[in-house]
Length: 98
Length: 407
Image 1: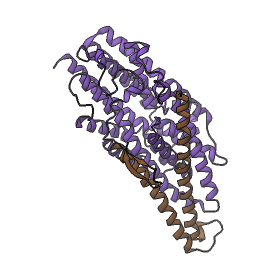
Image 2: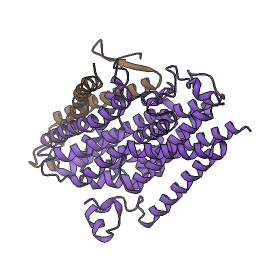
Image 3: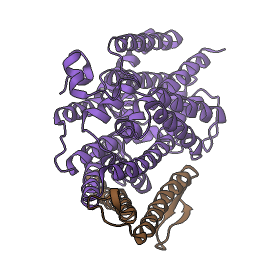
Image 4: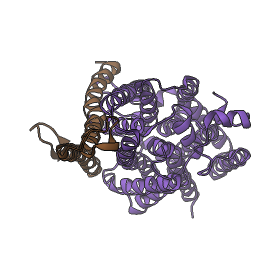
């Protein structure tokens, strides 16, 4: 296979992972902010609706997912510094040798 | 001290100098958006980025000794220098490395002067390629690899440079669009505050990744020079002082901050709002980490620029200054050949004079170029005080400001 073939093969994987983590996590973060606004009510929303505590709970749950994603990123950086990488073979991430 | 030792010292000093320019050239990649949206004060942003680069550089335990193998054939596959180049005590190899590093630094300084975010890895590779072509001929360059994996100048440098900004741009555009869709109906002040925090977090991730990736390259180059000169033999480890000094050099460079480039990326391309900043930095972090996971070499600079452009495309009604983007792309295209030409010229000059005198001569040329460009930069200084001034107003007031001429 030529270099172009290898590059395109790598590129679509990077694009997929990028969309999932690079656009998906910010979208969850945005949902979290929207939920918090729903929870806070009043001036936080254009509609000035009444506060709803469910929104606050949901908001922090979404932030927790985002933080897990960020921790995964940090783990990967640290692991690759030590010559390890993260494997997704078992769906949940595990640290393995490169 | 022998002649070789003195040349070795020059190589080490020059390599650390390159690492330093690498740092301040790339501060913008992580922090331009946070500075532009005022999520962080400029000085705080560069300090945070500097510390994270320092930590990142120390985290890279793995040896990047074979870094040059992707583009030039001056090393064996285990990282030791080619025997033919070390026959005369290593001076032949040291001269190639020295000339290549000078090519990289000169180009990094020139693009900084013009406020253009060009890739530091391209500058380093360009310089090394140029010096190798001059010293060993065209056959000394690994143009296309051997077809078994993504390799060579085409596979490791050119194709990723074309693909990575597009990928990052698409991801950032999708992210920005989603964020704006999702937060419709939420009060602006409420969202902006939340997104500032997200932005700081994602920018920090980019800084950390930068420290682990880029400082390693210089560590590899210095260790290669030490092996060539016979002062180090272990190809599995690098001397601690090399790691410490490289980490410090890149962190100090980052802390100094390439304000001209920060200004171009943060204010020149797109007027960035906090949601866009979050989308851009998340996209950069995700693309950089995913690529290094898949062994797809790319430049942080190209990714960051693509992301910021994408965040402008994805926000409904946002203005993107395509002329500024065009100037950047031009700079990217000529980075590799331009650094190569400087590297080659330096090799010829050093070889013509010969030996220690030759190495000292090209080192002096480097110092003269650096001093000249620094003095030129003082005429239109950009620092933490004016980094966020309005892009268009600056053009009107000071038409000679190079960073503004593309508008």
